[in-house]
Amino acid sequence: MSEPNSHDLRVNGVLSRLEAVIDAENAAIGSDRRFDFKQSNALKSRCLYDMTVLFRVVKPSDLDEQQKNLLATVKAKLDRNQLKVRAHMEAVRDIAEMIKATVTASEADGTYSADQFRTHDLS
Image 1 (cartoon, rainbow, N blue to C red):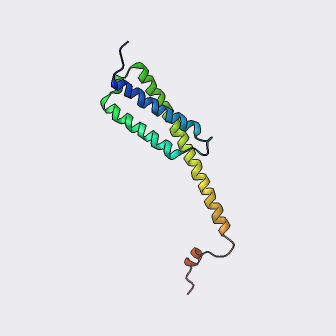
Image 2: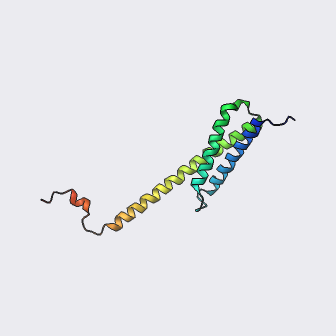
Image 3: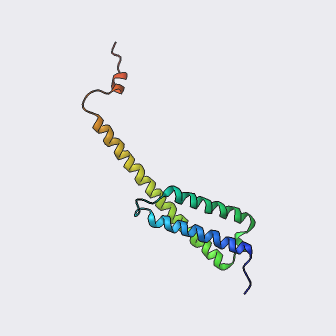
């Protein structure tokens, strides 16, 4: 068995780190209220950047079978992550809209608002 070259080590390292970040984020979405999305996104972005830089030098066709399988696994996990993040963001948006509607309704005490006065010429 030949010793792995530096590109093999970098490919394995980048893909493994990205997989770990995605696994942690996928597990936390919807279950860990204290999960730091900003930190996770920064780590994920860094891994994706490193992967982009790496694949400028290493062609995906040059990967061995194990690396191709790992790349496919990471891609599938990224696809799932995209769906989970999108659903989370939609839920956050919906909650923000509900809060906004509740605040607006609570501020309406039956009197006219300043905006309602501006729509009519009182002179």
